Length: 101
Image: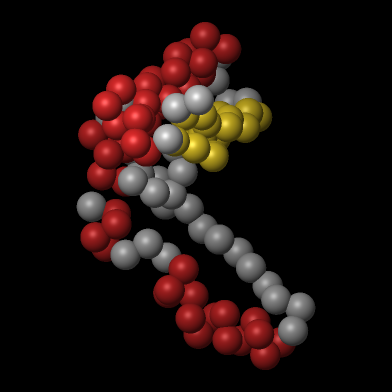
């Protein structure tokens, strides 16, 4: 196996979640790109109108036509001190400006 992806589906969206690649062989065959194309084909075939492509490789995903959509993460820790600390460092959880370009 050179590559795989796991898709989660709940209409109208398919989420492209986990990807596994044999990095020594996958680049030669463009497997990462092919996995996206196959996911798009799946969406079109089965009537899904959205493909959520995940939170990495923004530059590549924009090249193939993806649109970056702001999302929000809500969290609350059971321990008040831990929750306070998470609020102070939550900026570390957000992608940087260079990751979003």
